[in-house]
Image 1 (tube, rainbow, N blue to C red):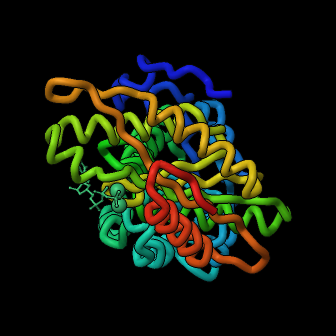
Image 2: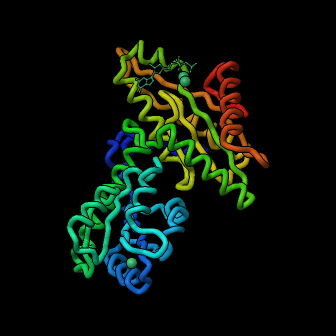
Length: 312
Ligand code: GH3
Ligand code: MG
Ligand code: MG
Ligand code: MG
């Protein structure tokens, strides 16, 4: 059974990719040795719709950075053992957090000390006690901008799908989860057939349309928990958590048929495009590289066996 294709949805513009999803709340990590004050600030930010995590020990800041994934850090300056400036400097030295906004919140009123804090990697300096509205506004505008920057960093601008490096990262996370929960996971490598010829025969803009249509089809048909990335010019990866090899084969073969049935406007006549696909399923102890390679090998087999087909 093949679901009918919603061409309107397939051809709509990239913008609705980001706007149809409900916006994620801003996530703020609050680092302050004064637990009561940290909780008070957390409540203010939560009332403004944000998610917060509070931390009283600055030496333990690295763990919530990777698990909570804050969009902004609200940081006290003076804490026992470690001060906020040192922590800001340490965080800035990690590539992944180079651009995370850090807002200092301290009773320090000496301007020179405040400038020092900015030089150490702070984006703004708020003095305690801060007016709730001031806190909310400073945090919200910076966190919003961070989320946009982050999405620009992980998305492919043409299709809105995860880019190559983000696809790898997402695959790693999905594999960790599958191992931890002892669940199945399959991946599919999808590559458009003779795509060079599509460009040569019909021009680059039509080639782009063939690409965008495939990315739309993949997104529209797959589950919310599935991950779709563009990992090369005309190559895509699909991560299917909870799917065994058979289920992945069935799913991708339906998609293959759907895609092959779409007609694109050519020079005089319309034409069809097809893709080949390689499937691989996660085994115990497999990592992302092993799985990726297995799917690539299966894709090679699909190409060798005549294209427009799915192989395991
Ligand atoms: P095969 O069936 O073996 O995969 O053949 P192929 O022609 O699809 O593969 P090949 O790797 O030879 O060519 C891929 C082509 O994809 C070459 C490149 O110009 C084109 N391409 C890559 N990115 C884009 C893009 O963003 N837009 C367009 N229009 N073409 C692209
Ligand atoms: Mg303090
Ligand atoms: Mg190709
Ligand atoms: Mg290719």
